[in-house]
Length: 408
View 1 (spheres, helix red, strand yellow):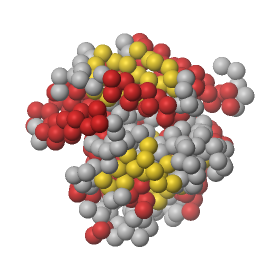
View 2: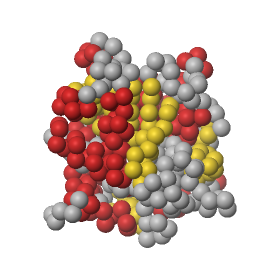
View 3: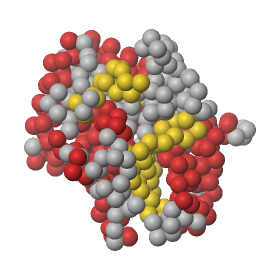
View 4: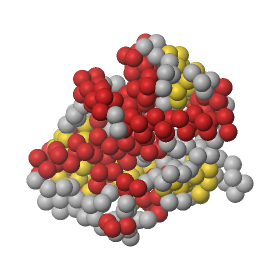
């Protein structure tokens, strides 16, 4: 088993506790003006979980609008080239809007409607959560405002236009590093001001309780489908499962159903950027420290004075200083292992997958791919890896072309 935690120690259904904590991590560190809104949201979510009508509508939209279930794809040519374990991709990139983000956007938008909230705000880095939110708001007739760092807007112009096409107002953020952290800050300021009529659809398994739990639950469908699909294809569970980790929504969605399977190694892959040097990466478990950021206690890249360090990743969606509190907990008890991939490794892996399988992956997902490419040859040919291909790379093609010296 990965790390030191035994299956008996993992009581995943009991997490988080009533205070929203995963062991020492999580919690609810927000201004007093948001406490009532978060309490109301948590209470409404608990009622929705027990409401067959809500669950039926959620399942219908995931199937008919988003395109679930997604396939589990055997990467035959990549497997043959690497010469090791059999590699399967969970094809979240085939969902409507191009990434796993729509699972959570649909769930939270339905909750907002239950609460009578007609205005939605969101933050986005790579733009996929923003696109998913804007799309769902268009579907449900909700007003939508998306906050996005101006640096991310420049490198994700296509997704900005997609959001605007769906009727969303995209507000650029020019404070701080002008990336995801700063977009979250602005979204939270908006929510404090407009909390009575506005719901904040947070896009990752981060923030104050109940968000990490709620986002995890809306993505659990990923791992639930994988369990059935891998049994059909291989007749057994995988040896290893791999996913990229920014805040951690796609990864916890994949891993959650397998946390109490002691023989399955689970690996989250962070953004190594230009290497593990201060300000040059976004790998929170490589030099991060315990602290509080944007609503929860977790591992954060910060200096000796508690100031948030600059981060860097080729991928806008992983360019963030904190990691989801549930990931911090499972890392500390030894159940999930964490690695990182550098920008150079990601660019090489991007090219490999395009060449071998004809699949253009999102740069976020390609971090998991880079690790998979290194790991698969270390395993025997009768072993099985499942990797979450959490998004497609249409949004990243221009950026990759620039890095590779192509004019498009």
